Figure (cartoon, rainbow, N blue to C red):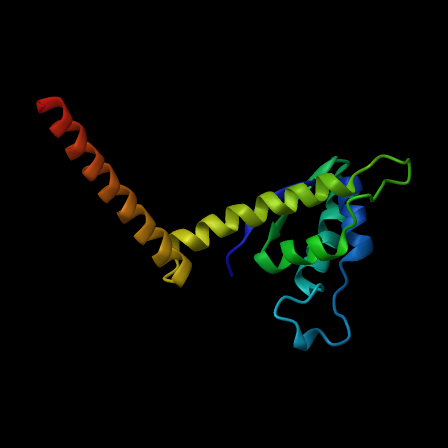
Length: 141
């Protein structure tokens, strides 16, 4: 599965631990259910890593489904126990990861939107050639 690495603070990991569950009722009907055993395990390991090694951050490997679960479950107004806003920071990291993954998929997939982007690039090249010929003609006149 394709993933990207994201660095989260200890406090951000605790926020994720509070919302990312290992399973949910009816998850089989979702294309990307907002629950993930793998992500839940990663968060638990990352929290242990931070606590045992006394480090302030840890990395998670996020898939597109993980980023969608975070988007669905993390409120942008979430705060630490000390009242510091961290929900928006977690969401922005998730959005960046999703954008990185989308670029990878667009570069490697043979899907309609990729074909459309290829066609658009071809049209732009044609337009540049036409404009170039027009400019050259005007210069000769």
